[in-house]
Length: 231
Ligand SMILES: C[S@@+](CC[C@H](N)C(=O)[O-])C[C@H]1O[C@@H](n2cnc3c(N)ncnc32)[C@H](O)[C@@H]1O
Ligand SMILES: *[C@@H]1O[C@H](CO)[C@@H](O)[C@H](O)[C@H]1NC(C)=O
Ligand SMILES: *[C@@H]1O[C@H](CO)[C@@H](O)[C@H](O)[C@H]1NC(C)=O
Image 1 (cartoon, rainbow, N blue to C red):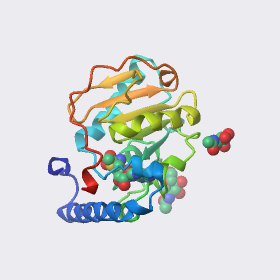
Image 2: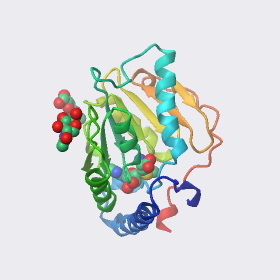
Image 3: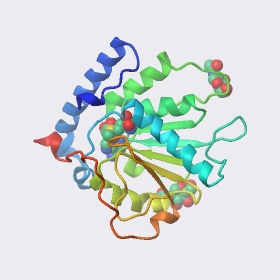
Image 4: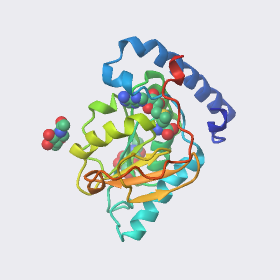
């Protein structure tokens, strides 16, 4: 996990984040007996996105939009684009999105990470004119209604993607896009992919979740072992 720690921010910020990360892992272990069965089958540990991974999210959205001549996903003064990060960790994707002009929301179950994101919003977020202040919610993303979002970003684990796809398919707007970090949603054909080892990104639209396809060539990326955190 050590190669994951980004080099952004001050040393203090990094240590704070590492402390929060360690606490987060402690919290997840402590919380396991109290989790609902759905949460237990999809234990999703805190693994922060790398700087490269975040860049790739927006690179892929831009690449796909250009390919399809979509302008809808490009935020501007007159174009509000609502983005949500499911399991926002320390908020890095949400802050980056907000800097790019998105109306960005992060949903995080872990109280420490949620508080850290809120803290950072009030201390480090500069209210640049025209930029929307990022919003963080302490909530279980399985219970969040996705109807209002234009872009759903998720850095999940392989095993949960199919169940998540079923949920998102029911709730997403017709023109909403799902951006999946590191793991494709197996059995569905992405509309765009940016392969970059562990920092790869796959994009799905609502239609792409209608048709099951033969398993795509298995991703070369090494999956996170879902049981890593509890043994
Ligand atoms: C792989 S990390 C990704 C963090 C962040 N999106 C990033 O890319 O840096 C997944 C995050 O999801 C959170 N999480 C796991 N299950 C969740 C749930 N059901 N609802 C909300 N957050 C959840 C974890 O606490 C963890 O912070
Ligand atoms: C921050 O920016 C938003 C969007 O431009 C604006 O509506 C809001 O009033 C600003 N808040 C502060 C405290 O300046
Ligand atoms: C989500 O919200 C929309 C609009 O408010 C509503 O029509 C829909 O039934 C909701 N879906 C779920 C699963 O709650």
